[in-house]
Image 1 (cartoon, rainbow, N blue to C red):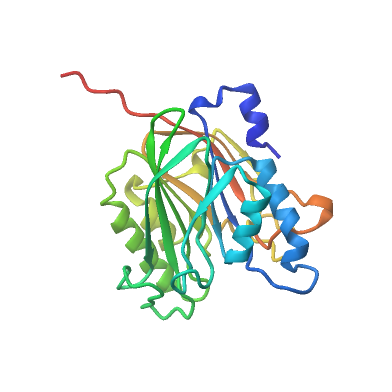
Image 2: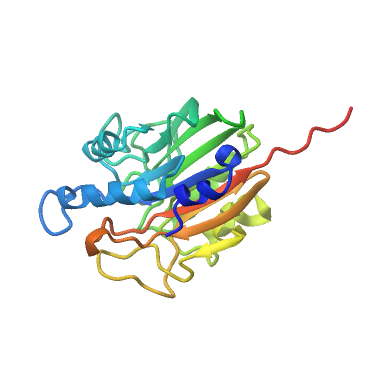
Length: 279
C-alpha cells in the first residue's frame, strides 16, 4: 500500500493533500465482523493511509467516537441521517493541524433537502450529504469537501441524488470541490456517473491519477473476497485545477481479517490555484 506517510517522506507535504473515502460498515455487536472485532482494524487502515481529510459512510455515533479516540490527530463533523445524532453519519474526519473548518452544511437527498430525514424518490433508506468548507493551514487554499452515500436499492434515487448534488455544487463559490462517497453504482458506465462528470463538471481521481494502485479491484468485498474486474462504487471526484499523483484502492487486511465490507479509496493530490490575471 502506498501510504501518504511514505509519499510525504519523499516529497514536501506543504502542497500535497491526502484524501480518502471509506465505508466503514455500520456496527453490529456480535459475529466475526462485529464492530468490537473490526474497530482496531479500521483504525489501523486509517492510520496507515494517513489522510488529511476523509469521508466515512455508515458510521454510527459510537463508531465515530471510537475512531476519534484512537486517532486523536483527527476531529470529525457530521449529522445523523435520521435527524439529530440518530442513524448513520456521512462523517468528515480532518487532521486538525492541517485543516481548519470554516463552515458546515448538511442536506438530504430528496425534494426537500433542508428537511432532516426526508426522502422522496422511493428509497426506504434516508440519504444525505455533509459538506465542509476548509482552509488549508499550510497553503492558505480553501476548498469544499462533500461526503455522501447513495441509495443501494432504487436506481432513480441514485440519479436524482446525483442531479441534486450537481445542482448544489454548481452554486458553490469555491475554486476547489472534492466529492467523495459510496455511490452504490459502478463508475464510468451509468447515468449517475455521467450526471456528476458530464461536460467535465467533476473529474474522477481514478482516471486522472498519474499512478493507479488496485486496478480492476471491486471496492465492495462483502467480507468475502478481493474481487477483480469488479465494480468501483466508491469514488473521489474533484473540481478545479487539481493534479492527482496517485489513487489507490486499499486492500490491506490486518492479521488477515476484514476491516469493513468496503475497501477505502485514497488519493494524493495537489490543489493548484490558477495564476492571477494581470490587470
